Length: 77
Image (cartoon, rainbow, N blue to C red; front, side, top):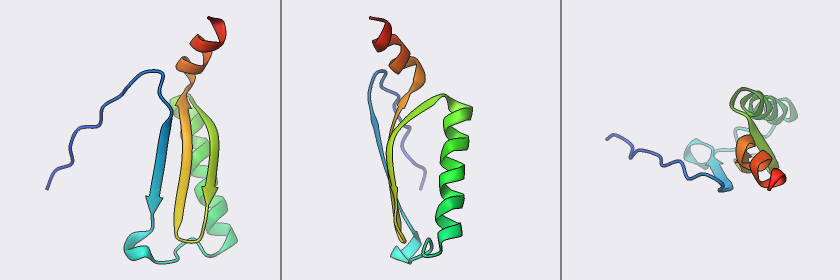
């Protein structure tokens, strides 16, 4: 079944939650968690995100992000 389209709402904080498949502990090793953090900051650089905070545990990830243009615009006003 296809996913519903994602809607972009300007000037909003994105709360992203990702759980490992079947609730398995796929991020139990330190190097796996560090690799995920590398991917997060690569996405930050590529897509112009401001990462407000993040948590990486052994079976899920929580992240709050804001698009950089929204952040810059609010700082100017």
